[in-house]
Image (cartoon, rainbow, N blue to C red):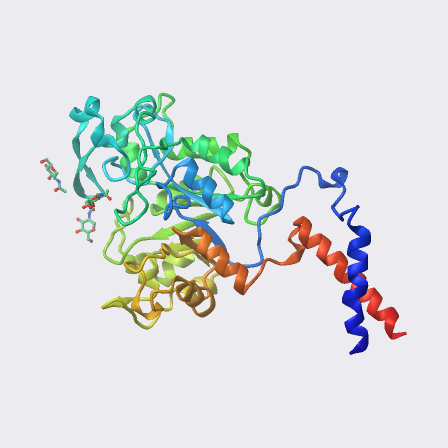
Length: 394
Ligand SMILES: *[C@@H]1O[C@H](CO)[C@@H](O)[C@H](O)[C@H]1NC(C)=O
Ligand SMILES: *[C@@H]1O[C@H](CO)[C@@H](O)[C@H](O)[C@H]1NC(C)=O
Ligand SMILES: *[C@@H]1O[C@H](CO)[C@@H](O)[C@H](O)[C@H]1NC(C)=O
C-alpha cells in the first residue's frame, strides 16, 4: 500500500526529469509511417463524410470526419457525362446541389428509368465535369445546418482519394460503385472500358490494392462496396482489395441480377458471395426489424454472416430523434451500444462520425499499442513504474 503510493511520486520526478527530452520514436525509425488505422474495435465509417454537419460528399465533410476520428471516409462514385468519376450519392442533382439556382441549366431536366422506376430531374450523366464544378453542394435534410449550402463544390474521385492520402494519420476509403447499371447505360468511355474498369484504374493509380489486413492494405486501407453483385464479381478479377456486398431493404430487388432480399441473404447465396467479398453491408432495419418505431427480435443474418467469416457493416446511423428508434430513448449512444455490444457488428456507417468516435473512445479506448506518440510514451512510463515497484519490493 505504502509503496504504490510512492510510485506516482517517483514517476513525477521521472516525468519532470524527462520533460526536456520527451520520449518520441526516432525520426530515422519512423519510415514515413503515420499513426496506423485502428484495428482493435469495429470500424467507424463516415457515411458521405461528416454529413450530419456539412453538405454530404464534399471535401469539407470528409475533412471534418477525419478531424473527428473516423477510420474510413465513405463515398458514392458516379460519372459525369464526359466520364470523370465523381463523389455524389443521387443520380440526380436536385436534392443535394443548388442546381435550381442555375438558370443556364434549366433545360437539362430529363426523365430516365433508374432501377425500374421513371425518375425526373437533373441527372449527373447529362453534365460535364466542368459544368458540375459550377454547382454548390447543399444539405439533404432541412433540419440540418443549412449555412454551408452552395459553399463547397462536388469533388472528383481523385480529389476524394487525395483527402484520405493527405490525412495526418492513416484514414481508409470506402467507395461505392454506385448505380453501375445506369452509369454503364448512359456513359461511354472512348477506350471501350466500363465504369468498373475506370473505378479500379483510379484506385490502382493511387497505389491501392492488397487483401484485407495485408501490409499494402494497412498502408492505404480500402473497402470497395456495391449493391450490384456482378460489379463485385467483375472487379474481383481486377483488384484484390476487400469488397463488401451491400444489401438493400427487403422490398428492393438487386439492380443487376434482379434478385430478392431473401435470395441474396440465403445460406446458399452467402456461401457463393463469400468467395468475392469480406463482408456484407445491410440496411440495419432488416437485421433488426422495426414495427411502430420499436425494435423487434433480431434476425439471424449477423450470426449466419459471421459463421462464414463475413464482416457485417450495417447502415446508416444518425443522431437525430427522427431517425432513432424509440427503444433508444432519443440517445444515439444507446443505439451504438446496442449494435456494437448486443448485435456485435464489425463496422458502422454513420452520419455523425464524431459521436461514434466519442462513444468508442469512452467504452473501448484505442489500444495503446496503436503507435501514437502519447501511447508509446505512456507505455514506457508504465514499464518504468513497473520496474520501480519491483525494486521497491526487493
Ligand atoms: C429528392 O427529394 C424528394 C422530395 O423530398 C424525394 O421525393 C425524392 O425521393 C428525392 N430523390 C432522391 C433521388 O433521393
Ligand atoms: C417510363 O416512361 C416511358 C416513357 O413514357 C415508358 O415507356 C416506360 O414504360 C416507363 N417506365 C416505367 C418503369 O414506368
Ligand atoms: C425482376 O423480378 C421480378 C420479380 O421476380 C419480376 O416481376 C420482374 O419482371 C423482373 N424484372 C426484370 C427486368 O427481369
